[in-house]
Image (cartoon, rainbow, N blue to C red; front, top):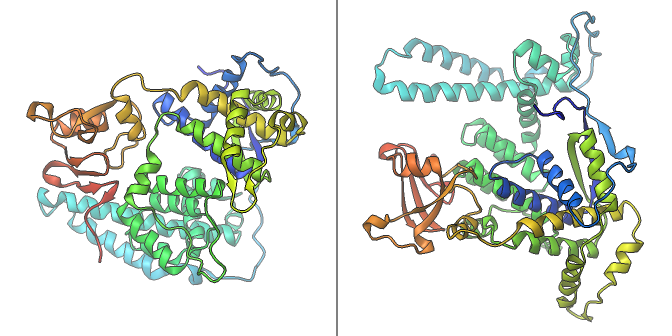
Length: 489
C-alpha cells in the first residue's frame, strides 16, 4: 500500500525558459531508461528529491514555499443524485446542429453496421478476419462521429440543457465512457478543424485517432502550409505511433532549444517537416554522456535568453510538491557543472565581435533572485541526477542498447524491460558479433517473435533492418517504424 495514494494532489505550475523545459524532458527520458519502463513524472520528481537529500548539503524539506505555485487539483464536477438539473442554456447565435454534423455520415454508418450484422458469421471462418477488420473500422467511425457531437454539445452548452454539469459528467453517467476518453474525442474534433489535410486523412480512416492525438498535440499551434501539412498526413499514415511520438518530441525540443532558425523574410513559411530516417535514428540514440552534454547546451542557451517562454506543470502529491519546491530553492549548481558551462561559452565565437565574453558564473548564481534562482536550482537537481546515472556501459550488449535508444526495435514496441541483443544472422549460421548484426529486442519479441516464427528480421543494423510481422508476413513489412506498404496512392 502506498501511503501517498490517498494524499490530495496539486498542480505545480512553473514558468520556465524553453531550454530548461528541454533539459527536464531529456533527464526524464534518462530516468525512464534507468527504471527500464515508462516511469511516471511523480517517480522522477521523487528521485530528484532523493538525490538532493543524499548530497553533501541536503536541503531542508520543511522550508516554507511559495503557495501561489501550488494549485489544488479539483476532481471533475459531477451532478449529485439529489441536485436539480441546471436550467436550459440560453439561446446563442452560432452554428446549428446540421451545420457541424453531417447526418449522411451517421446514416451510412448505421446502414453499414446493419449490413455487417446480417452477414457476420455466415460466410465461413475464412472470412472471419475481414469481418473483424470491418467491425473495428465501424467502431473507429462511430468514435469520430461521437467526438463531433461531444465537441458541439460543449460549444453550445448542450450538457447543461440535458441536465449534466459538463463533458465528464455526461460521458460517465450517460454514455458509460471514461472522462479521459471523452475529452480526447472532443479534442480531436476541435483541434483537427485547424488542420484540414490531417482531418481529411483521419475522417477517411487513413490516420488513426491515436496518431491524430499524438500529432495534433505535438504540432500545437505551429503554422503549416498546405504542402507541409499534406506531408505530415502521408507520413502519419505509414508511421507507427512510436515513431510519430518521437517526431513530435524532436519538434518540441527544437522549439525549446531555439534550434529553429527563422526563415528569411521573403521565404515562404512552410513549418517543420517530418525527419528522414537517418535524422530520426540519430535523435533516438542514447549514447552515454548525451544527457549531460545536452544539459550543458541547455544551460548555455538559457544564459543567452533567460526569459520564461514555456510552462512546466506537474501533478504531484502535495507533500512531494512542497519538498520539490524546497529542493529547488536551496540547491546550488555544482562547480563541475558551472565549469563545463564556462568552457562551452568560451569555445563559442561571435561571427564579427570575436570570442564571447564569459560571465562570472559563481557570482551570477549567487546574485540571482527568485524565480530565476529556482530555475538554476532545477538545473542543479537535473545535473545531479544525470551525473550519477548517465554513466558508461557495464555489459557488452549495453552499447547496442544505447545505440537503439534502450528500446525494443520491433515495430510499434516501445518496451524498455527485459532487453536482449539479437543476432540478425544467427551465430549458428555464421553470424558475427559486429554491431551491424545486432539489434535490441525485448524478451517477448526476441523469444516468441523472432525465434517463435512470428517475426523475421533481415538487413543491417541500425538503419537498414526490415521487419516482417506475423506468419507468412500477414502483419506487414516495416523499416525504421514505417509501413513499407502503401494503402493509397
